[in-house]
Amino acid sequence: MKYFEFGSENPELMVMLHGGGTSYLGMLPTANKMAKVYHVVLVAYDGFNPDEPETEFVSPMDEAKRLGDHIVEHYGGKIDILYGISYGCRVLMEVLSATRLTITTTIADGMSLRDYPDIKSKWGKDVYCFFFTGLFYAVMGHPGPRRKKFPAKITGRTPDEAERILYGKATWHSWKNQDYYLIGKKTDYSLFEKTDMHLWYGIKGTVDKKLSRGLDDLKSRGYPFLVKIFADLGHGGLAGEHPDEFLKEVRAAHERSAGKKTDGEQKDEI
Image (cartoon, rainbow, N blue to C red; front, side, top):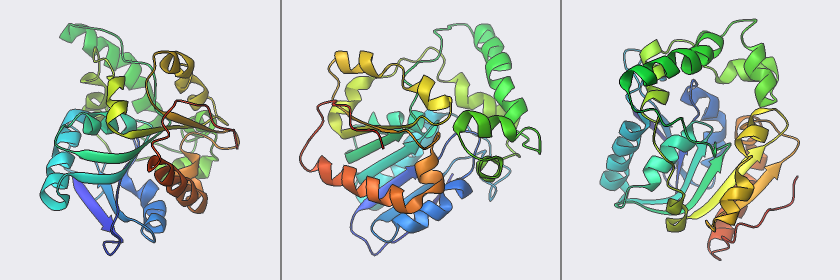
């Protein structure tokens, strides 16, 4: 696990968590842009870091714990902005659960509001991963000219954009461990109360339309959060392809956090 830092001269700390099946390189241009305003820590997960090909992904809990250790040791346990995209939102929720950390603004971009199935047995979990994880490993784990078309279609990106973010050298164990330890785990949405929570979705592709289906139910249960829908962008498209606009939106969200506007109100689409 590595941490790449940018803009250390800036007083406010922003931690960025990339998606599953990808490497930190997909977020590198955006991290550099954010460093004009924030002190950025870009996390590179074990197993998906081209600089450390010998490592393997252990679990989102492991990534979150070690990130927490790093933040406590070097930054006194304080994060001004915590950002996660796609699978990074799973790690993000584990980071939020750490009582030793104080997090002002949290942005979950393309967060799934559905839990993994409630399977107890190791055999059942292995079977689930064989089929569910195996599909994505086959399609995205070794991207090529044909396979990159699938993630492009579901995320609303061009094939070249999809190819840029994929990491094709992760092991099967790293892919499996992304899902295995989340099977049967229930998302604790009460963690939204310890931060100013923002949920973002880019619904141009099919992914975020499905991921955001539980928004109305989540609102009805009274959890505090703000929502923003990006109708003309795909899954993770703002951070991935539009760093200037991403910086603008992050700054706006963080400034709103000072006013504690977490009433769950749906914001206008853009």
